[in-house]
Image (tube, rainbow, N blue to C red; front, top):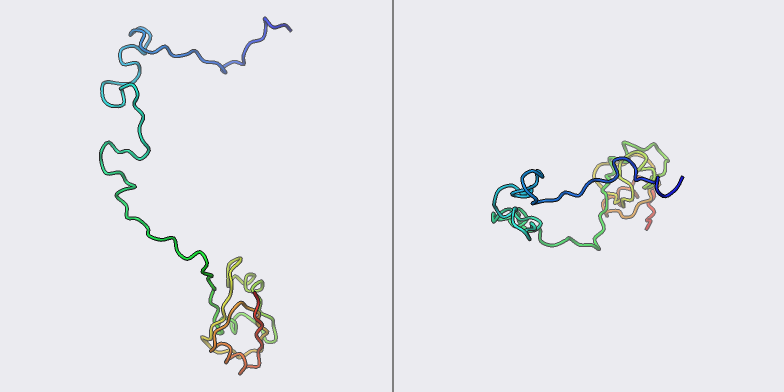
Length: 148
């Protein structure tokens, strides 16, 4: 093997297109740009979103004002009626167990609400609880532990 036998891989190189060198070249006359018009001129480059003078889509759509509150935390509500339905007597309720039972999504904080009745004794560990839920829990001898 010597330098004179080295060639590029087949199909890796292509001949340069010589535009505007007569009709016989196949790229003479308009040089592959079609007939007349803005796009056939030298120096043309379309701006992103330009629609030929028509009001562009990004200007026709209404603006979304504000980005919401970045510091606000959302708590997923769980009612006592749901706890009564999905848990056995003397069992523990934690966000991990609620996730296993598909009552909440991953990394969601939980707030226990007082809708419905609780007829079972449960040990509940959640991020927040409403006053009505806390009253119903103490009445049913269940316990609540707040977690962060």
